[in-house]
Length: 253
Image (tube, rainbow, N blue to C red; front, side, top):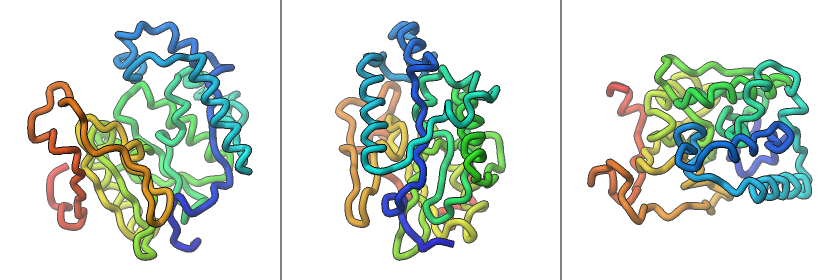
């Protein structure tokens, strides 16, 4: 077991990327009308695909320029049947969502369980790629409605404890957090904190991401306009509700 460290304090051995250009993912974005973008591809708006491609390339170059090893999914699993299905899906670019790795246990990974059926193939692709790199799968899910996206999981260190911050709302469920606690504590984690997100927040890492022991990158905790269909109880300035899972374990999922 490694020293108990946070995600931000361990240098990754490999950064997994998906290049959307050679597999036609950006062409898919161009072909879908803007008003159908969220329903069909889960994008809130139609991106400028040329700019998208340039920014993704610059992002990859910045990672490599900082001395990290980049590996592409097409290189690792491009010949697999699962990649043939998912390679042209623009969502595959968000590789963090489909699997979770732990900085203190670099030889294992946790597969995500996507709430959106469209994204199910991503989990298969990332699992295949990580296993090709030698990581072992940790099963955690106890029910079909325990949904979890990697973007809602932030490994952290609190007083030397291996801690997971897990957001739940639109894409992940509190039931999934409870299953994580049962599967990981005390062997692969010491503490798990469930953070209730505002109904308009997509993932935890988009609103709160520690980058040092005393620094976090945070999105303003409010929304200027109410989310469609949300009542006043859902518009409480986006202040997260942190659940004590031990105390809440007897509640329904």
